[in-house]
Length: 165
Image (cartoon, rainbow, N blue to C red):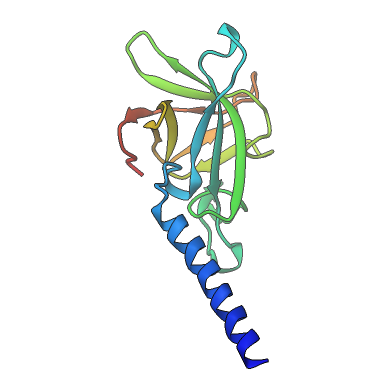
């Protein structure tokens, strides 16, 4: 009986070590908090469109307020610093005539159903070529839903070969 337990323990230990060694050897290109972009496939119509995956937000029970609304500090779940909530939305990237890069959401409620979004600074990994990654960097910003389109627009974006946030 003791011999069976010893073999079982050794087997479990070997299995645990093999998983931990394997996971440590993999390089993570998902950026901070697993933030990444995945291109939408579908031809010219979706050429600059991406799925944007990120985590944001923190526990409100210990937050004295992280957003100021009408002069009062309040906490809004799933917004701001942290990684408590996983979010996904479709975005389109646009360069203006003066080479300023912006991103606008394409779905209305992927990030929030509120008219305000406290987006923390994030770097989104994007596989440019097989095994080659670039990062879309979005600085932290408070954005407001456009009254006509109902979408959010992010400004101050940049692409780099390593994450900035």
